[in-house]
Length: 89
Image 1 (cartoon, rainbow, N blue to C red):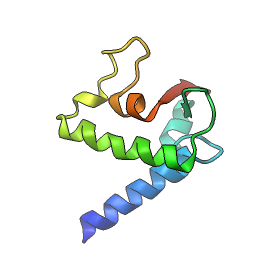
Image 2: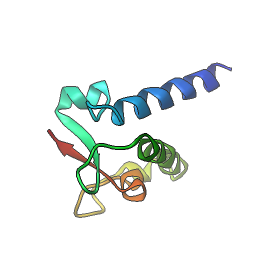
Image 3: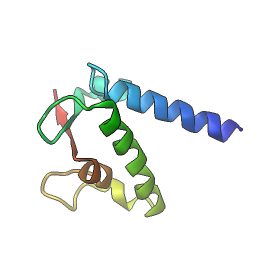
Image 4: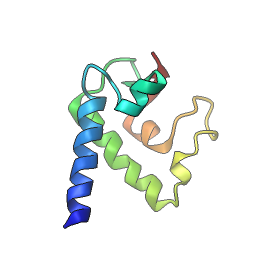
């Protein structure tokens, strides 16, 4: 039960903040970065959900999907699939 509650809280926190006007979680705001779509627009609630769901693929691949050095754009696997980019504000 605790795992389910934790997953729901993590999902709601990530999706709410990344699709909000702040365009990022509290940590991203502190680092001065934000998440946008490929057209540099704010993420929709649906796209933020897709980005969050795609992170599980990186977990399944033993975190290899989080390594950003494989591409010129320095995007993680979930960003490529969800068509999102993390940029500096």
